[in-house]
Amino acid sequence: MRPFLERLALPEDASWATLNRRLDGEIPFQWHHHPEFELTMTLNSRGQRFIGDHIGSYDDGDLVLVGPNLPHSWCSAEKVEAAKPHVALVMWFLPQWTAPLGGVFTELRAVAAMLARAQTGLQFSAATASSARPLIEELFTLPPDERLIQLLLVLTLLSRDAEAEPLASPLALPAPDKPVDRGRIDRVLDHVHRHYAEKLTIEALADIAALSPSGLHRLFLRHTGQSVTSYLARLRIGAACALLSGGTRPIAMIADDVGYDSLANFNRQFKAQRSVTPRQYRQRFRMGG
Image (cartoon, rainbow, N blue to C red; front, side, top):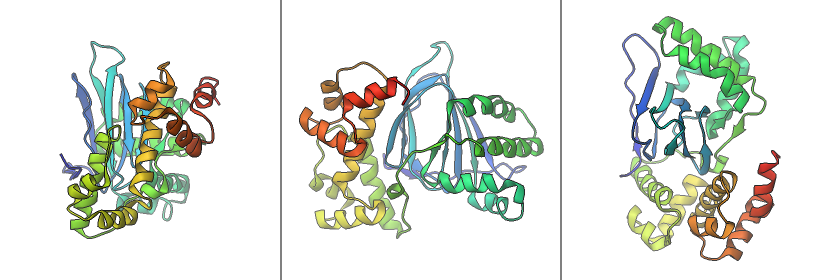
């Protein structure tokens, strides 16, 4: 399935949309993008999130803001409480909707600044997510007028989070292009994100895009600002970081899990991107630094 441009239908009585998504099975990988900002709180679920060229692990209470047209997906691994469903509380609002925030409403300049930072995605700190959780859960019970006020309260709270972390690199921001090129790059990115741990060749990816290898290189560089090889390495090392921080699996096995058949090459690529070895990364993560 190729990534798709998700088109959201607004309710008649609101200028933005919400979804209280509850799944007994799993949160499936659905690589997609849309013109709206998306604020998602994930509850009773653990797994991986994919945002642009970012791969990271998520846990109960994860709160992320995704910028317009930034490809993304969540993919669950397990529930926290097996008897309860995976829950995603999702809020979508258009960039046009937020335009007056920093101009007309001076008091909301911090919110406008946060939304600008969210172009590459933002993960909020555990403390801020915990504070926002009751506000977000209550938001879904309110009538439309009160729901809007509650959303502004949530965004204001989030804008004060000095520990919010960017997720994707600026290179992952979507580039405006012709529709046919958008379809080609989407097909390639979908395949790369689904199969990054496998052996991928430029020739095979070029076939997916219906281009020559050189044509694929130009298209990929124009949309992502980097080569296919560099993008793939970022995905693999990002996935390795999630595995290193989330368990005790041996490093050699993690290297194999994310697509490296050479531990030495994995260590070299990891240090080039993170400035530490995989072992040092795991130790630093456990120490909270």
